[in-house]
Structures are given as C-alpha cells and as structure tokens.
Length: 404
Image (cartoon, rainbow, N blue to C red; front, side, top):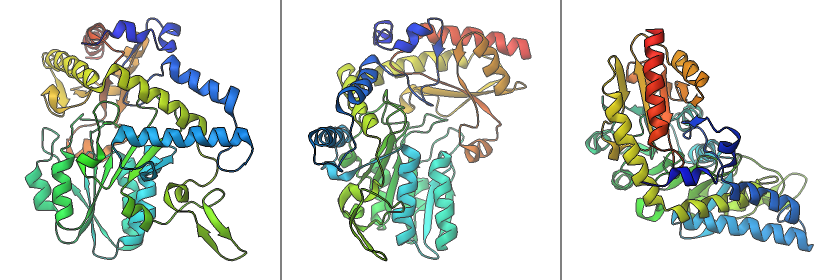
C-alpha cells in the first residue's frame, strides 16, 4: 500500500486540520502544494488572457494553456490535443454533448439509453433534449448488486438507439462499467457512447482509444486539480459535426451584423475567457498522480475497500450498496442503516472530525430503484490510510448506537 502518511504531508489542508479524517474525495479531492503553487505562479508571472493578444505575456499564457490541453490529451490517450475541449467541469462537458451533438442528430422516435446509476448531470440534459427533439429516453436498470450485465445492455440497445450514456464508475455504487465491451455493442447499431468519467479518471488508467468511447467527460477537482475546469474528449469526426450552444468572444472566425462563422476544433466550444490558470494547474495534478502511479493508487484503494467492506458487513442492520467485491468498485462505499437517517449519521461523524457525504448524491433514480432513501458515502483516495477507516468504523458504530 502507499505511504499515505507521507503523501498527506504534500497537502496543506491536512496540516491546517490535523484531526480531520477526510472521506469525501468523490465530491472533491484535496489539493497538493504543487497544484497551489502552479495557480499562484501563473497569476504572479504569466497572467494574461489567451488567444487575444500578440504581446509576449499573452503568447506565453496561450502557450501554457495549449500545453495543458496536450497534457490532458496525453493523460487520456487521445490521438490529438484537438480532441480535448476545456470546460468548467464534467457537468458542463455533458451538457455540451447533449446540446451541441444530441439536439442536432436526434429526431422523433430515436432512443437515448441511460443507466439508472447516472449522476443527474448525465440524466437531466438528455431529459431536456428528448423533450425538445421527440426522442425517447429509456433507463436501463441495474441489478441488486448495482451492476448492469452486458446481456442486459445488448437486449436494451435497438436499431432505434442513437445515444447511450453511462458512468465509467458510479458515484454511489462505485461500480466500474466495462466501457469497451459496451462500446462494441453501441457501435454495432451506429449509435454513440457518452461516458461520464468524473469518478473513474481519478482512480483508473483511462485510454479513450482503447475504450473506443465517442465522448469522455471529467473534472480536475476530483483528481487533485482546481475547481472550475474539466475536459470533454470527443472523436475528431464528431467534434466537427457539433455546433456550439454557447457563443461569444474567442470562438469565431468572422462576425457581421447578422451572421457569424465559427472557429474549428475545440476553440469553437470555448466561448469567453477559459479557465486558464486552472487548466495549467491541472497539469501539476496530473504530473503528481502519474508520479505516484495510477496502478499503485488503484491497488491502495482496493486494499482499503477490502478492509472497509469486510468491517461494514459485520454491522447489523447496515446495507452496502453496490458490489461486495473490492476489485469491482472504485474507492467509495455507500451504506444505508435501518432505522437511522444518513444525515444524522453524517452529523454525528462530523462532530468527530470525520467528513463524509449523506443524501442522494445527485442520483435519485438509483436510490429509488435500489429501494432505499438517503445513503451515507465514504470515499477515499491516495492520502487516506487504514487508520482513517478504523476511526470511521469506530465512530459509525457509536453513531448507530446513539441514534438506534
């Protein structure tokens, strides 16, 4: 396992809060000093708007920004940096796909398939696009173990299917989707596969070429980077067909009083001032993750999951959502406790300096399909260790006894 105690020293927040057990990395990760340094360095030495000035400072900022795009492309295994659109995060990226692609190609009677464990950011845009175009939105339901078998997907995908939307990893169940096998099924009928990678990219080695997905969305802030920046990978042929749904400065070729022509490539979808400093600081986060090693991080999380799952299964009246095998999930576990509300548990844990998430986690349909109310979620990352989970389990026992 990783030397999490040493890794934690790289994260200033833990020095400010030495008693904190932070188990909410699925909501946002903490930031190492190198990322904070990168933000400060840009604003101190290179601050200028990009692609707007011919003076040296603007050209330096533009170069750093485009280097960040190339770095994200390399991290994802994209063929070209021109397949990467910077956005404000996964939500913006998924909305971009729905409105710039979906609203253009979908017609009455076409089908959109979504998994029932989707984050609202993957569901709501397609609800709206379906209403606007007359397409039919269908939800594919996971089993009691929180998984959707390939046979279920195969039986759900029809000749009418045009778009399939799925999370690479669920933010409630931790379930990891077999994206490549699903992509093969989707492409057989000529449909496209949209992947929400927000919960997977921080934990798994992602290669979009190997996965063969058509779109892949992710956020920097869940993988040690700053808030306010994310990326959408899009296959080049699809990117050229898409039309911008946000227009303004920086994404045009020529404008008259009544008409406009747009730039090509990712610039077409980056209206206004982009998150320049955040994109540049994201590079520092990616470098940090790869220096630690994504495979090492993955093994560390699996070991933590094995320990946590085993301990939780000994608690009477506690239900674990999602697969019981650590290898089938990312570094999070969501639970429901009979007779005790998740918010009460989270409040008790908070008073003991343990930060967890309670609620529906922006995935209400999943909770309804799993026949449970709000859940308590503990999510861990490279800076967490077994002792963090021991404290969590110990205080969870006390919280259940207190409210039970």
